[in-house]
Image 1 (tube, rainbow over the protein chains, first blue to last red):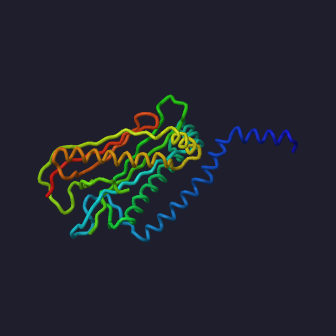
Image 2: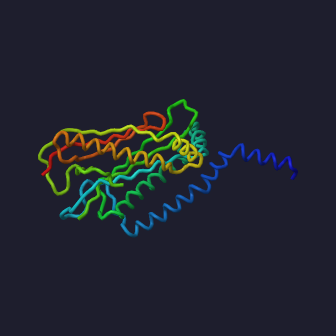
Image 3: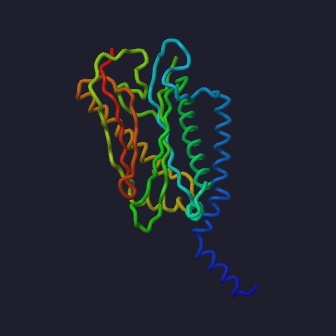
Amino acid sequence: MGAVQVLQLLGFITGNIAWIASIFGVLVYQPRKKKALLKREQASLISCGVNALTTLSTPSKKGEIQGYTVLVANVVMSPSWIQTFAGGVRALFGGRINTFAKLLEWARREAKQRLLEELEASHYDEVINVRFETTTLTKSTGSKDKTTGFEILVYGTAVKY
Amino acid sequence: MQPDVTMPFSNTETLPGSSIVRSHGVVTGSTVRAKNVFKDIGAGFKNIVGGELKAYTELLQESRNEALYRMCAEASSRGANAVVNVRFATSSVAGGAAELLAYGTAVTVE
């Protein structure tokens, strides 16, 4: 490989550094984060059980309630450039857009996990009336900057028996 | 995160352990906030890779607390001592800014 080819390669890498970073994000960074999340989920499944969060508006156990507070957890996630691009192409044909579906599922799991961790850190026993909200955060339309994200909000009332 | 508000409030229809004696109507609290431009640029870089935008997560958390605080301030100005059935709503109004709304029913409990 001559010096010219090396320079060409270097030029290609520096010219497309953002896209290369984006591929790195999808292939390395995001899976690593998801793996860490899975570990946290398994840890709190053992310590809290499956019934720590409920959407019911009344506590599952009968008895006097000592205290309560509202717990709020949120997370803002953004698709990488590659995912945004792939989603855009997929939206042309219609049908299920897997990249976004997976990302939303991940974000929702993350938010739920944060609520669980807050519950563990506090002295409350259970979170009732859990609600999910989703919002997209976008730059004003027409702007060159394509920074987008979506926010997942989870909140509920933590009660202590 | 536990919101830093002194008035008791809950997102259930009643407050556990106390009974509602009077309603004071719907109270709302809202705020529009933006991060500074450097954080926006940082988020723009993070957007390339994808994943969580921590700056915005914090921004929304702080703003939501402020909205809750304002809601409770309105409730206490009406003579209520608690807020029940609190709900949140969010919308992005402009680039990098978000409106956070918290609303609920102000009540007097005993």
